[in-house]
Length: 245
Ligand SMILES: C[S@@+](CC[C@H](N)C(=O)[O-])C[C@H]1O[C@@H](n2cnc3c(N)ncnc32)[C@H](O)[C@@H]1O
Image 1: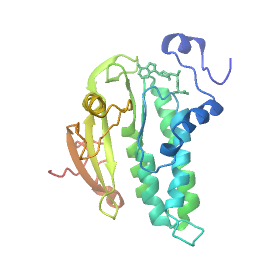
Image 2 (image 1 turned 120 degrees about the vertical axis):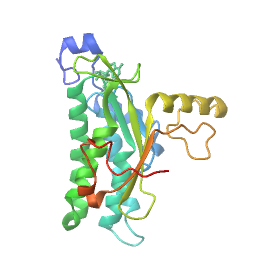
Image 3 (image 1 turned 60 degrees about the vertical axis):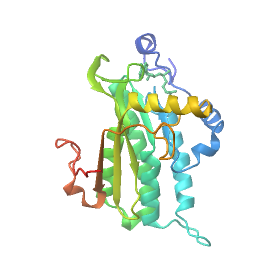
Image 4 (image 1 turned 45 degrees about the vertical axis):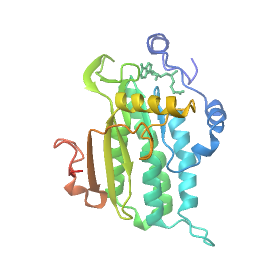
């Protein structure tokens, strides 16, 4: 049994075969420019324990370091890197049927982000930012069925809860994060309409505001991650501070 398989039963039941690093890199190189852009969005609809998304994050964090380094300086500025790294990690999405894969995938992404964050930001490192990243990952890497677009239970059966993805932006030049929630079904329908219009052959989730097929969002929130005590990360109160739009 190679590392690309956990068990024969999982291969038979869920088609679980992991892609080796060399193939992952070769495939990502086909869209190299996008993988090296801090804010390009990636969705892996059968992400497993994260082989593709972790490599995408590594590339994005390299770009984040460059973009946070002022001209004629060698080192990135801590606050700017913190912001760029938040943009990088929050633009990566994944879905998998198996909860154990989802948990490992979130943790691998977190560890890669945290290693870079601590190496770059040193004394400026703060728990509020780390909590925000954990929260973002809990929403971006979803245990669900990418065919039915529904969340699944521990037996991989559809629940009645649709998969919802959040679009994260930091539009205010401070530590406030804007989150807009969209159902996966709405995002796909809108992206398909957009592609029929533009005929690019590539689905574009969360199309920009001038896009023809802009999806309808469910809710919008704005929260300041440095004041995380005001924000309910457990989502018991519908996701914390809600801002009317
Ligand atoms: C072939 S593995 C690939 C994993 C990862 N993308 C990689 O290349 O290493 C397929 C993964 O898809 C998941 N899966 C199978 N059917 C799925 C579905 N309908 N929705 C979401 N995930 C699914 C399995 O649990 C498994 O982890």
